[in-house]
Length: 148
Image 1 (cartoon, one colour):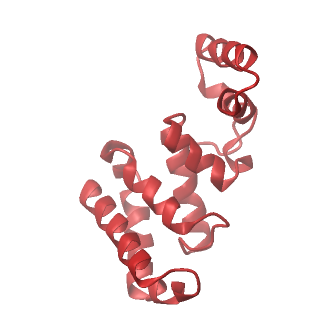
Image 2: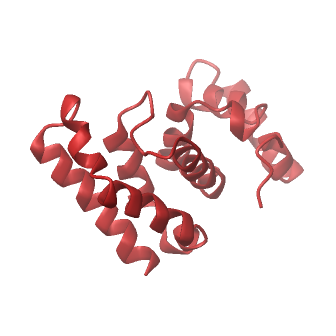
Image 3: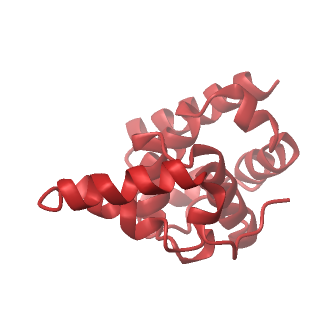
């Protein structure tokens, strides 16, 4: 089990940490190195949903970000709780490699069963068009194929 209160820099080797600090210092006028330095001083539970999506997009702390996204979805008992675009959240999860996703197979199965069994996708009418719902369900199918 991953400790959600552990600061991200504790997951880094000292060389990796030094590299991030040097990068942020050297490129302080660029948002990505500065963001990377900022997040390593936080724990998973302190990261915003956008930060978690960005971690996957930038391929940093992908396994930890995947864990945290799945935990948050599971805690809220719906993948539609997020203040960020639910579609992007599922898109980023579907882009994660199958080895990482398979670790969370039971939770993902339960989440997807909840979406299907309780018709949660139909309740998304307020913020999703029909084609977006199809895209969303497509991402679920990609994840299912990766974990089965």
